[in-house]
Amino acid sequence: MQIKTAEFVVSNQEVSKCPTNQLPEYAFIGRSNVGKSSLINMLTNQKSLAKTSGRPGKTQLINHFLINKDWFLVDLPGYGYARVSKSAKKTFQKFITIYFRERKQLISAFVLVDIRHDPQSVDLAFMQWLGEHNIPFSIIFTKADKLRPKAIEKHIESYKNKLLEFWEEIPNYFITSSTNYSGKEALLNYIGGVNNEIANETNKSHFQ
Ligand code: GDP
Image 1 (cartoon, rainbow, N blue to C red):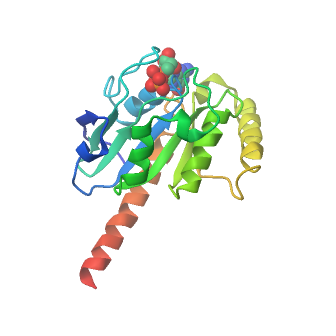
Image 2: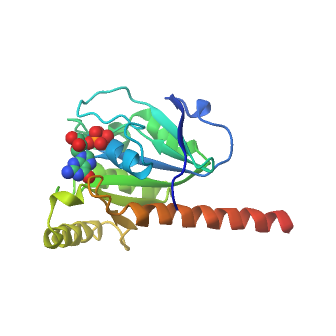
């Protein structure tokens, strides 16, 4: 899939104020500074659609971007800046958990993790929480350009081993870099493929 148009639609903290049409949406979330804004800008071929910033505590909003007039890319607030907590519920702001629980249009989440870091408990807890709430997700490893191929392999392997302590299967994952564009095609083709499946299902049910 190619992204031809990407438009900012709305920012807010209330799920009830999110767009009401039924387009499929994909939510991007991760710890602050993981490279989420850079990834969104890279995917959408824009310089500053999502605001890149090294600064923690920037306004916490649910941002909807309409892509190809066909689906929503949702930029959720970064989490985990010096927040220590025992449970995911305490860690994540309430409006984010409400978003995940109530947003019917949500097809899948993408949990971003910096490929250089060891598995962080806040990320693992969040994935666990998604699993418990039956919310499909993939992992996006970011900043792959910062490691050599052998080191990437090693980090992915150890991340998988950690995940297998909690999960029977490894979630779907992508290895990306906003600097050298790696993973862009795979990620967009994945979203395009899911959107096609949804469109086919919708057509089928119209003719039944
Ligand atoms: P966010 O807080 O998750 O939105 O992270 P940003 O996109 O603002 O990125 C945080 C920092 O990481 C910035 O200094 C970016 O330039 C840098 N960064 C983000 N993605 C990449 C990447 O793929 N490769 C490299 N080398 N740096 C990146």
